[in-house]
Length: 319
Image (cartoon, rainbow, N blue to C red; front, side, top):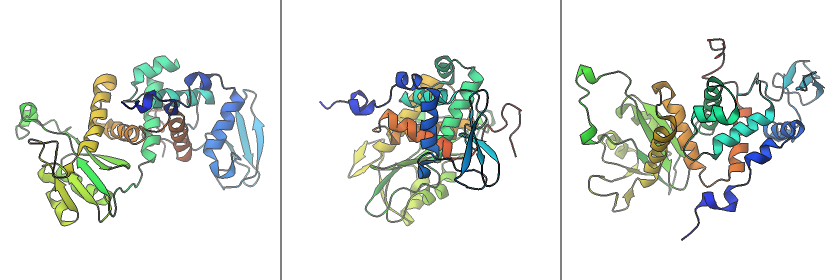
């Protein structure tokens, strides 16, 4: 029997001990290389794009730069998800390592204990890392000629079904997660109020000339006019006549286990972030933990401040 990837040497290329033993200078060097990849770590002004800058340090030891062109000051994290950070840089690298090492997700409570920070700070940091993961999926289109894509939404089992036509069963909070996953490739999750609302989004995320595998849901009937379709009725079989959605179903397995075993409750407004996290973990399940850490750190340093938590501490979002 083949060894599971997570047990192999290739899966473990970065240990938390190694990150914690880094000096501040080593952590700075890593962050510089991850943020400014095109200049091999040489600073680029976020205001004017100038590549010439003076290096200065504050009495606290914080590294700062001053642009030679526009004279604006900036740091390694200015204008990124980690802007205005309070912890040392190696702590952020350690936080990403702790977050990525979990296979099905990391609860904010456990994260706060591991990092020695408050629950509130841990909750915000976890969501910022989910935002970084979501950056990998921005504008992603899967499939193409001679490629196959699976599309699934959670099952509504008859014994668990409630009559949503009754007012007492209408909370207005119901949402469904839809996953579009390319076989041997990446996936894209979405969250919608109803199955029908996902149809136009689904069409925009699947390339032309793709063979689409779907379940028996009536929500996918309109896709027949645009794609070659293979349907599977799960009441009778998991796979039949070449039709199968098992790879897409594995995403929901990871998402459900993360909810049941780690998070226990996911608020509706955060559902998309958790779905994007599960999708990213599923797509990178055969990537070493060292590569995952550096990928998430690079994504966090390559995008702007948080969409969800800018101005969080001041009880408002920055404009």
